[in-house]
Image 1 (cartoon, rainbow, N blue to C red):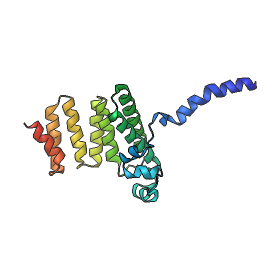
Image 2: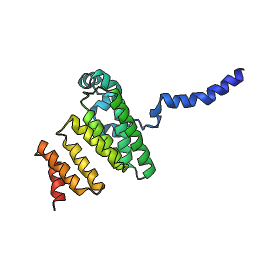
Image 3: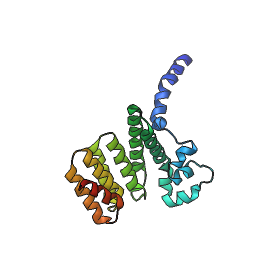
Image 4: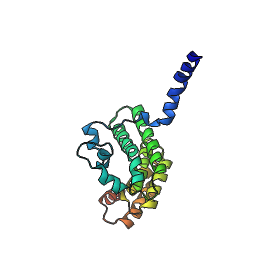
Length: 195
């Protein structure tokens, strides 16, 4: 009987660990070089020397703070994807990042200050995976929260171009410029498209 229960533990426990800890496929930031590419709150969340966790906890909100390490992991996965020449590794890293960002969106407050950025990064990741419709939906979600978010307009325009929808790209830039008339990134993109 004892022998049977050990087999049960050996066969059942590993899948349960994966269900409880799905983020095991993350590339957790650990090096100084990785943390240098991440926002300062990531160093604080991972309690790196010289960081100020209490400051960031109060700035981002306690409930959001508890989830922020998932977003830091997602950003690190995105950085790894962009640095990789291996298409399979890129796809895996971006897919894991999207899953993590969705998890953070589901577990943080609707008023979380980073919410527009979360949608932006999710959209950019979808766009890199050539899931253009999902990317556009993510950018629109960011803009519903922050209508003057020039990065979202720029990335949405870039995605429309990848889809072969030049007119939609131009329209998106013009709408963005109504909200942010001095945005250099939007102006540059529009100038390139109008040549």
